[in-house]
Length: 560
Image (cartoon, rainbow, N blue to C red; front, side):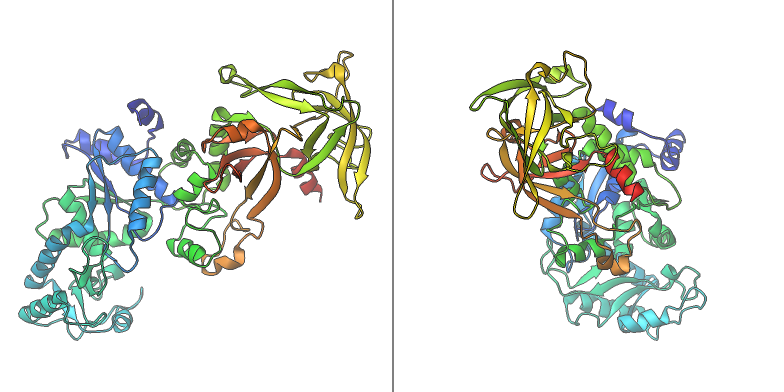
């Protein structure tokens, strides 16, 4: 991203105000932020907010932003996730340069510091099970109970901890806990677990370690090692900040970063829980992490959402201190606004209905000129073939139309985009009574879309030539959930059964197929579409990024 882009996207918020104040007070020579994902899944649009904030602040204040993987749980982490996260951050328009780090880079240092906590009497080895520890931790209104192993001698704790590291004990046999205060009002300070035994192969360290640090222990110390000045987290970590600061105070860390919390992103019709997203994939509810219905960055990319629209969306919602729910319509607005300016126009018929123009000469055809973008003359024009047999959209015809239906019906005249006025003169049905073909006439004097006698029509319809158009599969994506506030505990019950509609008999103009890129195009009157990775020259596949508003459909829905 250019400096001009960064400046244009910069907003003011309480975190940026803090950073500016720290610079004015000469508290830091350089601002250093970080984006610290756990590599146990794909990034989603909520992460995009954090990415834009951390990288944006670093760019705006001439600092650095680290990409650091907090890889402390090898049972859930995979190289696939590491690779996807790096690709997603870059796709969003940000780069960490040479500042790529892993919490596992610091495992030796973290272990040494843990031994230091034991020596200073601030940590002990606990033999209780996970369930016993949970039950003894107390509640929000009742204090916890001290572990029977809390006062073990330092040497015994060191011996057991070293044997844990050596792999002598099975999973769950022992943990290392901080010795803080079991009656603390903040439950996170009631002797939290710092290390647990975990015999698992780590993506980067292999089988070297049999114990792994907790996220709370590794996180703050990794920040300190890297010289992070502003550790920016979402609000759920606010109650963890006292532990973050306690550990920094008790350890000989090279720097003492400060943690700041902001509201995470919540969207209507969307769940961003990593557990839910993982279960959606593993349960086969979607086709993968990059399913275009998923709120993952990979899913949004495959759907055709431009990164600039995501950055604009994040900028518009701002950075707040209180949680709230953002209407998904704001995201859709940003997508439409961006694509309306950038997307070339093309014609596609998603649900074809054949039209035969009976007074058009058999075997004849002609080329008509069509605009590539109505607001950008520099985009040029293209040629579209016109002949006796055409396809129109099935929804553009009604045999017995209601009032305010101005599209094609028996005896009614409409304009074909870039072409002629046509009038429906006959309807052909199959044995089941379904309309399968229309017979029409055209007025040769209306070429280009206007009548010499000044008569008006109330509808302009898109169309395609039957012979020169190409078959394609179109995937229409809608919201994955049917409720604005889906239940994370029972997400499967709130899934939208109409979240995906596959149209296998669609037709597209050759100019669409000729573009072998994933750039989004506007299919006129239909919406914005992008070529799917499944697409091949023999089987063209396009995904709908987002639709256009249909005022007639809204009106009918309101009356119905």
